[in-house]
Length: 210
Image (cartoon, rainbow, N blue to C red; front, side, top):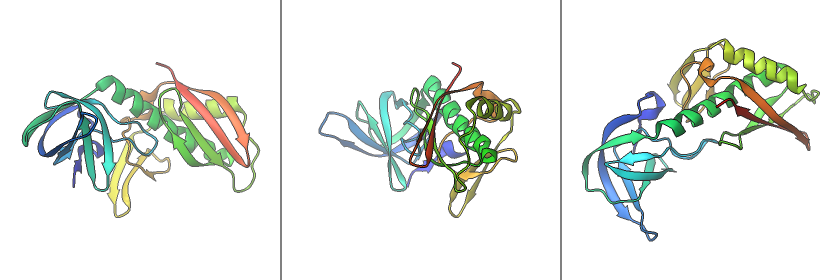
């Protein structure tokens, strides 16, 4: 089992212990740690990158209750330093939190999120409306989500029997394994780039100011 430090820590460097390192056929290595700061790909968020013990982390992968770290070099068992790529983490964190804010903003329009994808250049939510609400005006939805962001609602996190929940202020909290800003104001202005309706679902594409 890998302790996921990123659930409740915003730190970008720490130490951990290598418990196993296995060479892979493509020349990379699969490293297991007792604890990790690196968010693995999943939940609509890309993997963190960075370094483990001075070798490059290419990607982190969920493997049950363990995180496998794919590196470009081998490591011996024992203590190592961890360093997360700060620029990539910040972008992924802002995009993921923006998705939560957009989901909350869509609720008063009669739409709820059923799928999400928070990758740079591809960020989008797929919404559904049980009551067949009209498609929201893009300008009105943009105004609503940016009002939530500007209000700077503070991040709230807790660990429940079902898993970790994340919310902001009084906005609805949801089960989520991703990384998030401390308060929504860190996201900056959100732009809706496209709305697409198909077979009862509404896909809302969005981007952020760099």
